[in-house]
Image 1 (cartoon, helix red, strand yellow):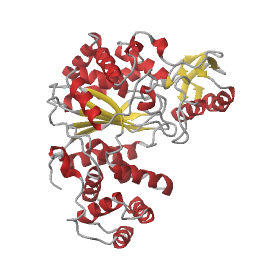
Image 2 (tube, rainbow, N blue to C red):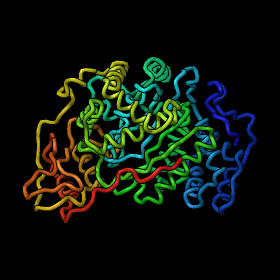
Image 3 (cartoon, rainbow, N blue to C red):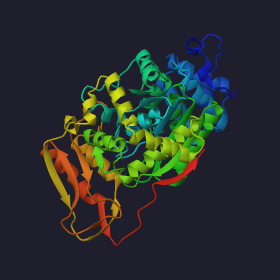
Image 4 (cartoon, one colour):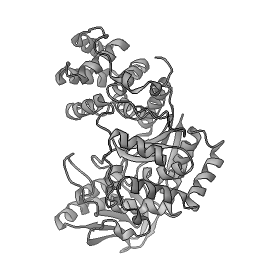
Length: 456
């Protein structure tokens, strides 16, 4: 594959040319992959193109996905598969924006609100951030759901509006455009119902096809590992990181991946409105240590990729300056206005939704917190109504969990471990057993490292 960046082509050349493409046999391709043999670049492009055009049925694509799930894809096959997915729809052309363009993607966790303070901090330093985020699914929260708890804030933007907001503000916080990587959206739905979700090449190509279609110069990845992450162990998280950095290199886009721990939630707030509150704290130069540490770490990566800081120290100094001067908060307010929201939330947090009822989870004994399970706490938040168990579920932006203790905290019997804000007694009762189980009290232990390593 040529090492050029796709984004320099103009828009109209991006519909894949169905006519010039040689015809292949989908059955032969399935059989070859099933038997562990390589599939040519031409064949892979043809498969994605024909499937997007409805000329390959779901049952044959499902069979191919299962063959890929079992046999994997080579580095070359994966680069071609990803490129074909990103070319299956529109590719944003942001070349006319003079600032360097860098996005960030997290593989998802509990209390992971990092994108929300991070993007305005980086944009205030002079790197454009055309951020497309997702909704919460399963036990992990979604950036879009959190942003929509800001009164009036719209995340559904069409392409022209998305580009116009980046041009004007150097920052946009939108949802995944329907026209971007449509092959991915369809393949993802198939994977969900055919047992082929946890496949390294399929996960990597799904994320990277969407991100590279944004027309960015660089991408910073936060790959989570631990009980509350999709990748439970460090080895598989590292393998995913290396695969995505590789895809970026094949496409001519610089990618840096950081491995971070997700055994306990990030920060103290899990929910939607309350996570916006905590994000605003970070922009106001406060907020919990772990959220602050990770936001600045990933922010420095973004400034370095954007080429506007010579080294990490200079990058961190720029970010601190953007926060202490108020420029980062102003940038966030600008974008809130541009996307239809009420910027007064920055000063008046009571404008954020909060459920009316409160319940305190208390420590059953005296000791140190040795476990604060991210998965159980994430599922408890979903049961309260802060997340979805199905795509069509509504989210209640005012419910959530505030942690008073995390790993390393010393507690006495009866001390508050967590405060639950809720609206519905039945939902509270379904969440409580998980919350009570999430906290483990024992002998003192060192607090685990948040940043585990980096792949570039």
